[in-house]
Image (cartoon, rainbow, N blue to C red):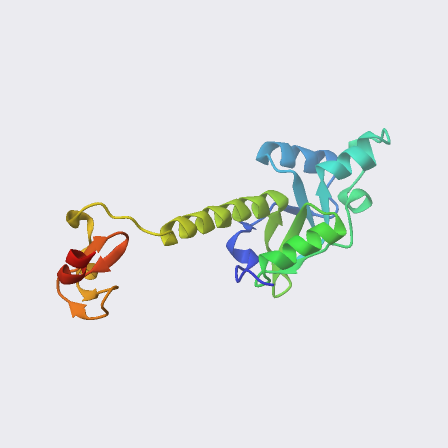
Length: 185
């Protein structure tokens, strides 16, 4: 099943990326200043890993390591799991669930172009639910109270009772009817 919505439509463009030889303390400062929970690690123009807040807690703080003594290369999560910008959001969701990851970098022609997070997926899911709710409401049986509420485009048409075309239809008991059918009801 596909949604028809590619990840490029919901991704964060231009995610924060730093060189593989960057010191952990510098990467942490960058993350704090920009208020992000992860940073993509680059080797030249290639994304090769990711450093997350979880990585910092698990691989540095809990091990009582000195951040200035480490570079991203020694702490980053690698290999980097990526997905193409044109892939469906459901594919991203499936990968994230299967691999127990909360972020997935987005690539186009092997170049880093974005990042999708679990929060992005929740946001789009909520929005799709709102759209579905509005569509359901829109298609519920209409009840129109008086003639002034009948739009011009449906005041003419086929009587739902006798099946003939008329120029002046009105609602009666939830159906559009001509004058003679309304009188017999």
